[in-house]
Length: 81
Image 1: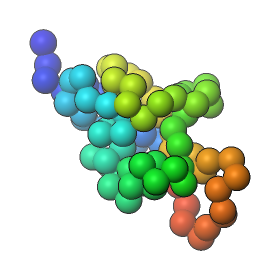
Image 2: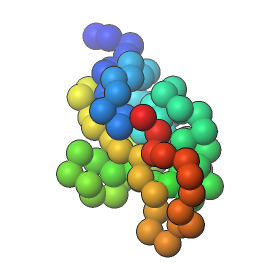
Image 3: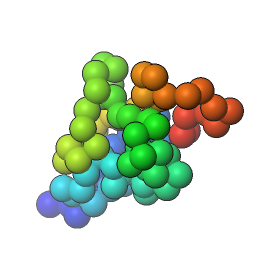
């Protein structure tokens, strides 16, 4: 059994430690995006666009997107990836 699983954050592959959270996987790709999720400025969705909690454990092949939260002030920073 592998110690890492391949997941996708904004269509970019990330090899994340098995059992880590979606937020941990985002942090591996883009620490500033992870900080924005922690602050509530951004959120996570699954491949269907449904919201997911940042602490959900990753599974092999999972797809997450970093999105702007509804009601969050628009900024000039594009979504991670």
